[in-house]
Amino acid sequence: MQHIIIGAGPAGVIAAETLRKCDPAASVTIIGDEPEPPYSRMAIPYYLSDNIDEAGSYLRDPSTHYSKYSIELVQERVEKVDSKAKQVTLSDSSTRNYDKLLLATGSRAISPPIPGLDLPQVHSCWTLVDARHIIELAKPGANVVLIGAGFIGCIILEALVKRKIKLTVVETGNRMVPRMLNDKAGGLLKQWCIDKGIDVHTSCSVESVKAADNGEVQVSLSDGSKLPAALVITATGVKPNIEMLEGTDIKLDLGVLVNHSMQTSNSDVYAAGDVAQGIDFSTGNFEVQAIQPTAADHGRIAALNMAGNITEHHGTLNMNILDTLGLVSCSFGLWMGVDGGEQAELYNPGEFQYINLQFDGDCLVGASTIGKTQHIGVLRGLIESRINLGHWKERLLKDPTCIMEAYIASTQELGYS
Image: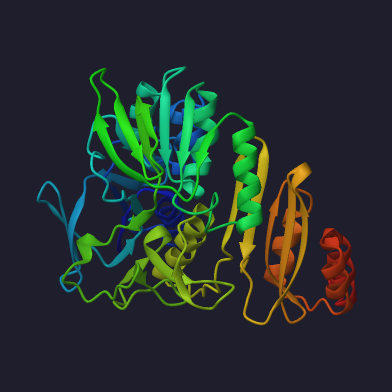
Protein backbone atom coordinates (compact mmCIF):
# COMPACT_ATOMS: atom_id res chain seq x y z
CA MET A 1 0.00 0.00 0.00
CA GLN A 2 1.40 3.37 -1.06
CA HIS A 3 0.31 6.24 1.22
CA ILE A 4 1.30 9.77 0.16
CA ILE A 5 0.75 12.78 2.40
CA ILE A 6 1.05 16.24 0.88
CA GLY A 7 1.96 18.62 3.68
CA ALA A 8 4.57 18.46 6.44
CA GLY A 9 2.73 20.23 9.23
CA PRO A 10 1.12 18.69 12.34
CA ALA A 11 -1.73 17.08 10.39
CA GLY A 12 0.67 15.41 7.98
CA VAL A 13 3.16 14.22 10.59
CA ILE A 14 0.51 12.82 12.93
CA ALA A 15 -1.17 11.11 9.99
CA ALA A 16 2.11 9.50 8.92
CA GLU A 17 2.78 8.21 12.41
CA THR A 18 -0.75 6.85 12.70
CA LEU A 19 -0.46 5.11 9.34
CA ARG A 20 2.81 3.51 10.38
CA LYS A 21 1.22 2.11 13.56
CA CYS A 22 -1.86 0.82 11.74
CA ASP A 23 -0.13 -0.49 8.63
CA PRO A 24 3.49 -1.47 9.43
CA ALA A 25 4.15 -2.84 5.94
CA ALA A 26 2.87 0.17 4.01
CA SER A 27 4.94 2.82 2.25
CA VAL A 28 4.41 6.20 3.92
CA THR A 29 5.72 9.38 2.29
CA ILE A 30 5.38 13.01 3.42
CA ILE A 31 5.90 15.62 0.71
CA GLY A 32 6.49 19.16 1.98
CA ASP A 33 7.48 22.26 0.02
CA GLU A 34 9.51 24.09 2.69
CA PRO A 35 13.29 23.59 3.05
CA GLU A 36 13.15 22.88 6.80
CA PRO A 37 12.17 19.63 8.51
CA PRO A 38 8.48 19.45 9.54
CA TYR A 39 7.83 22.17 12.11
CA SER A 40 5.04 23.87 14.03
CA ARG A 41 3.98 27.35 12.97
CA MET A 42 2.68 27.84 16.50
CA ALA A 43 6.31 27.75 17.70
CA ILE A 44 7.37 30.73 15.56
CA PRO A 45 6.51 33.32 18.27
CA TYR A 46 8.82 31.48 20.67
CA TYR A 47 11.56 31.63 18.05
CA LEU A 48 10.96 35.36 17.57
CA SER A 49 11.20 35.80 21.36
CA ASP A 50 14.56 33.95 21.44
CA ASN A 51 13.02 31.34 23.75
CA ILE A 52 13.93 28.59 21.27
CA ASP A 53 16.18 28.22 18.27
CA GLU A 54 14.88 27.03 14.91
CA ALA A 55 15.31 23.40 15.88
CA GLY A 56 12.98 24.00 18.80
CA SER A 57 10.13 24.47 16.32
CA TYR A 58 10.62 21.04 14.74
CA LEU A 59 7.74 18.65 15.36
CA ARG A 60 10.09 15.69 15.72
CA ASP A 61 13.85 15.09 15.77
CA PRO A 62 14.59 14.97 12.03
CA SER A 63 17.88 13.14 12.52
CA THR A 64 16.26 9.96 13.84
CA HIS A 65 12.48 10.02 14.04
CA TYR A 66 11.37 9.63 10.43
CA SER A 67 14.00 7.05 9.53
CA LYS A 68 13.16 5.07 12.69
CA TYR A 69 9.53 4.80 11.60
CA SER A 70 10.35 4.37 7.90
CA ILE A 71 8.60 7.59 6.93
CA GLU A 72 10.06 9.09 3.77
CA LEU A 73 10.41 12.88 3.69
CA VAL A 74 10.43 14.58 0.28
CA GLN A 75 11.10 18.32 0.07
CA GLU A 76 9.45 19.35 -3.18
CA ARG A 77 6.34 21.24 -4.16
CA VAL A 78 3.40 19.22 -5.52
CA GLU A 79 2.33 20.99 -8.70
CA LYS A 80 -0.54 18.73 -9.71
CA VAL A 81 -2.71 15.92 -8.43
CA ASP A 82 -4.13 13.48 -11.00
CA SER A 83 -6.85 11.72 -9.01
CA LYS A 84 -7.81 9.45 -11.91
CA ALA A 85 -4.28 8.16 -12.51
CA LYS A 86 -3.64 8.28 -8.72
CA GLN A 87 -0.46 10.22 -9.26
CA VAL A 88 1.13 13.48 -8.07
CA THR A 89 3.56 15.59 -10.09
CA LEU A 90 6.34 17.43 -8.23
CA SER A 91 8.13 20.68 -9.01
CA ASP A 92 11.17 18.75 -10.30
CA SER A 93 8.84 17.12 -12.88
CA SER A 94 9.05 13.72 -11.18
CA THR A 95 5.88 11.80 -10.35
CA ARG A 96 4.74 9.64 -7.46
CA ASN A 97 1.96 7.06 -7.55
CA TYR A 98 -0.33 6.45 -4.60
CA ASP A 99 -3.02 4.09 -3.40
CA LYS A 100 -4.29 6.53 -0.77
CA LEU A 101 -3.58 10.25 -0.73
CA LEU A 102 -3.90 12.70 2.17
CA LEU A 103 -4.17 16.41 1.43
CA ALA A 104 -2.64 18.16 4.44
CA THR A 105 -1.41 21.11 2.42
CA GLY A 106 -2.34 23.69 5.05
CA SER A 107 -2.81 27.33 4.22
CA ARG A 108 -0.75 30.34 3.30
CA ALA A 109 -0.72 33.94 4.43
CA ILE A 110 -2.68 36.38 2.30
CA SER A 111 -2.17 40.11 2.01
CA PRO A 112 -4.68 42.84 1.17
CA PRO A 113 -4.31 44.79 -2.11
CA ILE A 114 -2.27 47.62 -0.63
CA PRO A 115 0.35 49.39 -2.77
CA GLY A 116 3.86 48.73 -1.53
CA LEU A 117 3.42 45.36 0.16
CA ASP A 118 5.98 43.94 -2.25
CA LEU A 119 8.77 46.05 -0.74
CA PRO A 120 11.63 44.17 1.01
CA GLN A 121 10.70 45.72 4.37
CA VAL A 122 7.28 43.99 4.30
CA HIS A 123 6.80 40.39 5.44
CA SER A 124 4.12 38.07 6.68
CA CYS A 125 4.76 35.86 9.73
CA TRP A 126 3.77 32.40 8.59
CA THR A 127 6.97 30.50 7.86
CA LEU A 128 10.44 30.14 9.34
CA VAL A 129 11.75 32.10 6.35
CA ASP A 130 9.40 34.94 7.34
CA ALA A 131 10.64 34.72 10.92
CA ARG A 132 14.27 35.08 9.82
CA HIS A 133 13.43 38.27 7.92
CA ILE A 134 11.58 39.67 10.93
CA ILE A 135 14.50 38.93 13.26
CA GLU A 136 16.86 40.67 10.83
CA LEU A 137 14.77 43.86 10.67
CA ALA A 138 13.21 44.04 14.15
CA LYS A 139 16.22 45.51 15.92
CA PRO A 140 15.83 47.16 19.35
CA GLY A 141 14.33 50.61 18.94
CA ALA A 142 13.10 49.97 15.38
CA ASN A 143 9.66 51.17 14.33
CA VAL A 144 7.47 48.22 13.37
CA VAL A 145 3.94 48.33 11.95
CA LEU A 146 1.75 45.25 12.34
CA ILE A 147 -1.18 45.14 9.92
CA GLY A 148 -3.94 43.07 11.51
CA ALA A 149 -4.91 42.48 15.13
CA GLY A 150 -6.58 39.14 14.58
CA PHE A 151 -5.54 35.83 16.12
CA ILE A 152 -2.29 35.55 14.16
CA GLY A 153 -1.35 39.17 14.80
CA CYS A 154 -1.95 38.91 18.52
CA ILE A 155 0.04 35.67 18.75
CA ILE A 156 3.18 37.39 17.44
CA LEU A 157 2.52 40.73 19.16
CA GLU A 158 4.17 39.74 22.43
CA ALA A 159 7.17 38.27 20.64
CA LEU A 160 7.67 41.56 18.80
CA VAL A 161 7.48 43.61 22.00
CA LYS A 162 10.11 41.37 23.59
CA ARG A 163 12.47 42.40 20.81
CA LYS A 164 12.26 45.94 22.27
CA ILE A 165 10.88 47.53 19.13
CA LYS A 166 8.37 50.40 18.87
CA LEU A 167 5.15 48.75 17.75
CA THR A 168 2.08 50.16 16.02
CA VAL A 169 -0.89 47.87 15.34
CA VAL A 170 -3.43 48.69 12.62
CA GLU A 171 -6.78 46.85 12.56
CA THR A 172 -9.69 47.51 10.20
CA GLY A 173 -12.20 46.18 12.74
CA ASN A 174 -13.46 48.26 15.63
CA ARG A 175 -11.66 46.07 18.17
CA MET A 176 -8.81 43.62 18.52
CA VAL A 177 -9.36 39.96 17.54
CA PRO A 178 -12.83 40.66 16.09
CA ARG A 179 -13.39 37.02 15.08
CA MET A 180 -12.76 35.83 18.63
CA LEU A 181 -13.95 38.56 21.00
CA ASN A 182 -16.96 40.88 21.12
CA ASP A 183 -16.81 44.68 21.45
CA LYS A 184 -16.32 44.73 25.23
CA ALA A 185 -13.68 42.01 25.34
CA GLY A 186 -11.84 43.23 22.25
CA GLY A 187 -11.91 46.76 23.66
CA LEU A 188 -10.35 45.59 26.90
CA LEU A 189 -7.56 43.88 25.01
CA LYS A 190 -6.93 47.08 23.03
CA GLN A 191 -6.70 49.17 26.19
CA TRP A 192 -4.37 46.62 27.78
CA CYS A 193 -2.01 46.88 24.81
CA ILE A 194 -2.13 50.69 24.84
CA ASP A 195 -1.26 50.68 28.55
CA LYS A 196 1.75 48.49 27.68
CA GLY A 197 3.07 51.13 25.29
CA ILE A 198 1.69 49.82 21.99
CA ASP A 199 0.10 52.29 19.58
CA VAL A 200 -3.18 50.66 18.46
CA HIS A 201 -5.31 52.00 15.60
CA THR A 202 -8.71 50.28 15.24
CA SER A 203 -11.38 51.07 12.62
CA CYS A 204 -8.39 52.04 10.51
CA SER A 205 -6.61 50.66 7.45
CA VAL A 206 -3.27 50.95 5.71
CA GLU A 207 -3.62 52.82 2.42
CA SER A 208 -0.06 52.49 1.14
CA VAL A 209 3.52 51.60 1.97
CA LYS A 210 6.19 53.67 0.25
CA ALA A 211 9.99 53.46 0.25
CA ALA A 212 11.77 56.20 2.20
CA ASP A 213 15.20 57.70 1.55
CA ASN A 214 16.74 56.16 4.69
CA GLY A 215 16.13 52.58 3.59
CA GLU A 216 12.94 52.28 5.61
CA VAL A 217 9.32 52.82 4.52
CA GLN A 218 6.48 55.21 5.23
CA VAL A 219 3.10 53.69 6.07
CA SER A 220 0.05 55.86 5.31
CA LEU A 221 -3.14 55.16 7.28
CA SER A 222 -6.76 55.97 6.50
CA ASP A 223 -6.91 58.26 9.55
CA GLY A 224 -4.25 60.50 8.01
CA SER A 225 -1.31 59.15 10.03
CA LYS A 226 2.02 58.60 8.31
CA LEU A 227 4.26 56.16 10.15
CA PRO A 228 7.97 55.49 9.59
CA ALA A 229 8.87 51.81 9.75
CA ALA A 230 11.91 49.60 9.44
CA LEU A 231 9.58 46.61 9.18
CA VAL A 232 5.93 46.05 8.23
CA ILE A 233 4.30 42.74 9.11
CA THR A 234 1.06 41.62 7.48
CA ALA A 235 -1.22 39.38 9.53
CA THR A 236 -4.47 39.63 7.62
CA GLY A 237 -5.58 36.03 7.27
CA VAL A 238 -4.77 32.78 5.53
CA LYS A 239 -6.08 30.83 2.55
CA PRO A 240 -6.14 27.02 2.04
CA ASN A 241 -3.62 25.63 -0.45
CA ILE A 242 -5.80 23.91 -3.05
CA GLU A 243 -4.30 25.04 -6.37
CA MET A 244 -2.80 21.64 -7.20
CA LEU A 245 -6.33 20.16 -7.26
CA GLU A 246 -7.48 22.15 -10.28
CA GLY A 247 -9.11 19.87 -12.84
CA THR A 248 -9.63 16.96 -10.44
CA ASP A 249 -12.90 15.38 -9.33
CA ILE A 250 -12.24 16.54 -5.75
CA LYS A 251 -15.00 18.89 -4.64
CA LEU A 252 -13.95 22.23 -3.25
CA ASP A 253 -15.65 25.08 -1.44
CA LEU A 254 -13.76 27.30 1.02
CA GLY A 255 -11.43 24.33 1.37
CA VAL A 256 -11.53 20.64 0.44
CA LEU A 257 -14.94 19.19 1.29
CA VAL A 258 -14.73 16.02 3.41
CA ASN A 259 -17.19 13.66 5.07
CA HIS A 260 -17.18 12.31 8.62
CA SER A 261 -14.27 10.03 7.70
CA MET A 262 -12.18 12.96 6.37
CA GLN A 263 -12.69 11.45 2.92
CA THR A 264 -13.12 13.73 -0.09
CA SER A 265 -15.45 13.22 -3.05
CA ASN A 266 -12.76 10.85 -4.38
CA SER A 267 -12.77 7.70 -2.23
CA ASP A 268 -8.97 7.34 -2.31
CA VAL A 269 -8.24 10.93 -1.31
CA TYR A 270 -8.57 12.39 2.18
CA ALA A 271 -7.95 15.86 3.63
CA ALA A 272 -6.93 17.17 7.03
CA GLY A 273 -5.99 20.41 8.76
CA ASP A 274 -6.28 23.97 7.46
CA VAL A 275 -7.16 22.79 3.96
CA ALA A 276 -10.05 20.56 5.05
CA GLN A 277 -13.60 21.81 5.31
CA GLY A 278 -14.62 19.45 8.10
CA ILE A 279 -17.50 19.26 10.53
CA ASP A 280 -17.78 21.88 13.24
CA PHE A 281 -18.85 20.52 16.63
CA SER A 282 -21.07 23.45 17.54
CA THR A 283 -22.91 24.07 14.29
CA GLY A 284 -22.85 20.70 12.54
CA ASN A 285 -21.80 22.59 9.41
CA PHE A 286 -18.70 21.85 7.40
CA GLU A 287 -16.21 24.66 7.95
CA VAL A 288 -12.49 25.42 7.77
CA GLN A 289 -10.88 25.67 11.21
CA ALA A 290 -7.29 26.84 10.81
CA ILE A 291 -6.03 25.90 14.28
CA GLN A 292 -3.45 23.28 15.28
CA PRO A 293 -5.67 21.15 17.59
CA THR A 294 -8.09 20.65 14.71
CA ALA A 295 -5.23 19.75 12.36
CA ALA A 296 -3.94 17.11 14.78
CA ASP A 297 -7.42 15.64 15.21
CA HIS A 298 -8.05 15.57 11.47
CA GLY A 299 -4.70 13.95 10.70
CA ARG A 300 -5.21 11.08 13.12
CA ILE A 301 -8.76 10.31 11.99
CA ALA A 302 -7.92 10.57 8.29
CA ALA A 303 -5.01 8.15 8.72
CA LEU A 304 -7.11 5.62 10.60
CA ASN A 305 -9.60 5.55 7.76
CA MET A 306 -6.88 5.40 5.10
CA ALA A 307 -5.58 2.29 6.86
CA GLY A 308 -9.03 0.71 6.89
CA ASN A 309 -9.90 1.40 10.53
CA ILE A 310 -13.27 3.07 10.08
CA THR A 311 -13.46 6.05 12.44
CA GLU A 312 -15.92 8.94 12.36
CA HIS A 313 -15.07 12.53 13.07
CA HIS A 314 -17.82 14.07 15.16
CA GLY A 315 -16.61 17.62 14.88
CA THR A 316 -13.99 19.83 16.46
CA LEU A 317 -14.88 22.57 18.92
CA ASN A 318 -13.76 25.95 17.64
CA MET A 319 -11.53 27.37 20.36
CA ASN A 320 -8.88 30.06 20.64
CA ILE A 321 -6.65 30.96 23.59
CA LEU A 322 -4.32 33.97 23.54
CA ASP A 323 -1.78 35.30 26.00
CA THR A 324 -1.18 38.93 25.06
CA LEU A 325 1.49 40.56 27.21
CA GLY A 326 0.19 38.67 30.24
CA LEU A 327 -3.53 39.11 29.60
CA VAL A 328 -5.18 35.80 28.71
CA SER A 329 -8.24 35.78 26.48
CA CYS A 330 -10.18 32.81 25.15
CA SER A 331 -13.27 31.87 23.21
CA PHE A 332 -15.04 28.55 22.78
CA GLY A 333 -17.79 27.31 20.51
CA LEU A 334 -20.58 29.71 19.60
CA TRP A 335 -19.08 32.59 21.58
CA MET A 336 -21.23 35.07 19.62
CA GLY A 337 -24.44 33.30 20.70
CA VAL A 338 -27.42 31.81 18.85
CA ASP A 339 -30.72 33.29 17.75
CA GLY A 340 -33.09 33.39 20.70
CA GLY A 341 -30.40 32.32 23.16
CA GLU A 342 -29.65 33.95 26.49
CA GLN A 343 -26.34 35.20 27.81
CA ALA A 344 -24.63 35.87 31.12
CA GLU A 345 -22.01 38.58 31.37
CA LEU A 346 -19.53 39.97 33.87
CA TYR A 347 -17.68 43.14 32.85
CA ASN A 348 -14.99 44.60 35.10
CA PRO A 349 -12.89 46.92 32.92
CA GLY A 350 -10.92 48.35 35.85
CA GLU A 351 -9.45 44.89 36.50
CA PHE A 352 -9.37 43.86 32.81
CA GLN A 353 -11.80 41.03 33.51
CA TYR A 354 -14.68 39.83 31.38
CA ILE A 355 -16.81 36.69 31.16
CA ASN A 356 -19.55 36.00 28.64
CA LEU A 357 -21.56 32.76 28.58
CA GLN A 358 -23.92 31.90 25.74
CA PHE A 359 -26.83 29.48 26.12
CA ASP A 360 -29.11 27.59 23.77
CA GLY A 361 -31.97 26.52 25.98
CA ASP A 362 -30.41 25.06 29.12
CA CYS A 363 -27.09 24.16 27.43
CA LEU A 364 -23.92 26.20 27.38
CA VAL A 365 -22.91 26.53 23.73
CA GLY A 366 -20.27 29.25 23.79
CA ALA A 367 -18.07 31.33 26.06
CA SER A 368 -15.45 34.05 25.98
CA THR A 369 -13.28 35.46 28.75
CA ILE A 370 -10.63 38.10 29.34
CA GLY A 371 -8.34 38.00 32.37
CA LYS A 372 -10.16 35.05 33.98
CA THR A 373 -8.09 31.92 33.56
CA GLN A 374 -9.80 29.84 36.23
CA HIS A 375 -11.85 26.94 34.96
CA ILE A 376 -11.21 27.47 31.25
CA GLY A 377 -11.16 23.69 30.87
CA VAL A 378 -14.53 23.48 32.60
CA LEU A 379 -16.03 25.89 30.07
CA ARG A 380 -14.83 23.69 27.25
CA GLY A 381 -16.08 20.55 29.01
CA LEU A 382 -19.57 21.94 29.57
CA ILE A 383 -19.86 22.99 25.93
CA GLU A 384 -18.60 19.68 24.55
CA SER A 385 -20.70 17.55 26.88
CA ARG A 386 -23.92 19.43 26.04
CA ILE A 387 -25.05 18.97 29.65
CA ASN A 388 -28.52 20.24 30.46
CA LEU A 389 -27.82 22.71 33.25
CA GLY A 390 -31.39 22.94 34.53
CA HIS A 391 -31.69 25.37 37.44
CA TRP A 392 -27.92 26.01 37.29
CA LYS A 393 -28.46 27.98 34.12
CA GLU A 394 -30.48 30.54 36.09
CA ARG A 395 -27.71 30.78 38.67
CA LEU A 396 -25.13 31.31 35.96
CA LEU A 397 -27.25 34.03 34.39
CA LYS A 398 -26.99 35.87 37.71
CA ASP A 399 -23.34 35.02 38.38
CA PRO A 400 -21.28 33.58 35.50
CA THR A 401 -18.31 33.01 37.83
CA CYS A 402 -20.12 29.98 39.35
CA ILE A 403 -19.08 27.84 36.41
CA MET A 404 -17.16 25.24 38.46
CA GLU A 405 -20.02 24.78 40.91
CA ALA A 406 -22.44 24.38 38.01
CA TYR A 407 -20.20 21.81 36.35
CA ILE A 408 -19.73 19.71 39.48
CA ALA A 409 -23.41 19.78 40.41
CA SER A 410 -24.62 19.03 36.88
CA THR A 411 -22.26 16.11 36.33
CA GLN A 412 -23.08 14.63 39.73
CA GLU A 413 -26.80 14.80 38.95
CA LEU A 414 -26.13 12.90 35.74
CA GLY A 415 -24.01 10.33 37.54
CA TYR A 416 -20.74 11.24 35.83
CA SER A 417 -18.73 11.40 39.04
